[in-house]
Image 1 (tube, protein in one colour):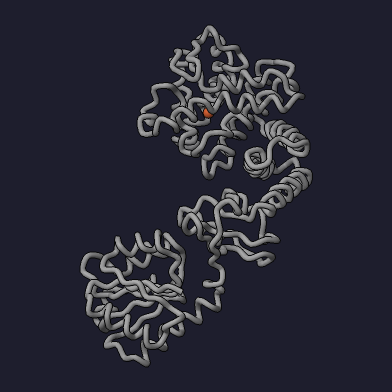
Image 2 (cartoon, rainbow, N blue to C red; image 1 turned 30 degrees about the vertical axis):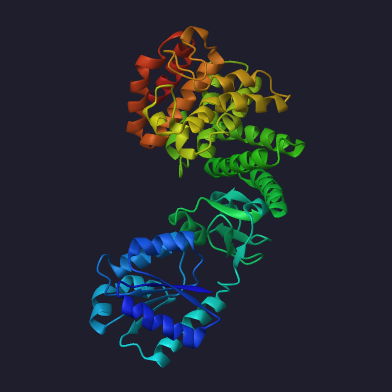
Length: 457
Ligand SMILES: [Fe+2]
């Protein structure tokens, strides 16, 4: 095990190094750093560390702030604050100390026997939590990432789940067949962990189990709980995306997507009007899966309002909504909607090119779904704009078909809702701002229907 000592007095490094050497020669190697930023760098690049020791007299930063940063970045682990009685009293905040049972205090002066005892307690805590044994060194090729959100579906899983510490080191985050809580998953989210890792073969099992679980849940949800149905469809889209990217388009996946599209229609029918649906929509992360479901619902609403024979068209817009942004590499890029968007300047040229090509790539994917015709061009055109400032082709209003226009309006409406939040006033403000953009060509009629619905009251 490695221990990290953060202290700006070099004499103390020598003292503690000698002490570790004398008492824990084989068990622990001590790494010493002077400053908070060095500590964070060392933890990130030279980890994992099983134990942290912070000297409370450090001058350049606050010891409790540093401890919080460490827990936020690498997760809670045994941590010892050392210092004089006054320093500990003044600089270790009670709320932090009380919240974490693996945090201990050591009052100076250093007495060999006492220090050893405190460190042994920390080692025992680490052992009790199976902390050290849980760190495995493996190549990333043996693991596949799974979006953290998938784990809200379960209370326990039949395989070990890992968090990536460095490119080659993973730490077990959830043990096989051991119940975990929703708040544990929220804790990962707070630490900005977006992916958990599974061993490759177990990854496929996870996805297939998730598909079966969601299919069953959708059958059991009562008609009068459309919000629950929408939440379950969102979970389904998330799994479908992962499945397509990792495994491909297999028959069971196609059947699953048919079921999701069917349930999108069922959800829409359960609401008396679109505004109620929008205000109740469970927008929690604003991510691509949530966006897809909301875009599908709005497109289907417009298709129905146009009086089109809807069965065929709603399936088209449903599949378009599910597939169109699957190849957007990062969630935050899903709001880049046109060719001159200022955020594009921050992307590297390869990233920019991939983003410009995501409609085409997703359009090709739609060819695997032979039951749905003409979906490819709707997907390919989902970033076109009536004024010609869209991508990839820069078509203008006259060249964009009405079915594409329906999806483009729905898509941009949802992106605005993600950025502004969903409220009665945001709905109206967005519709007003769309007036000068979409009141033209094939956009005119779908926009007018959406706008009437929102401004009805
Ligand atoms: Fe897109």
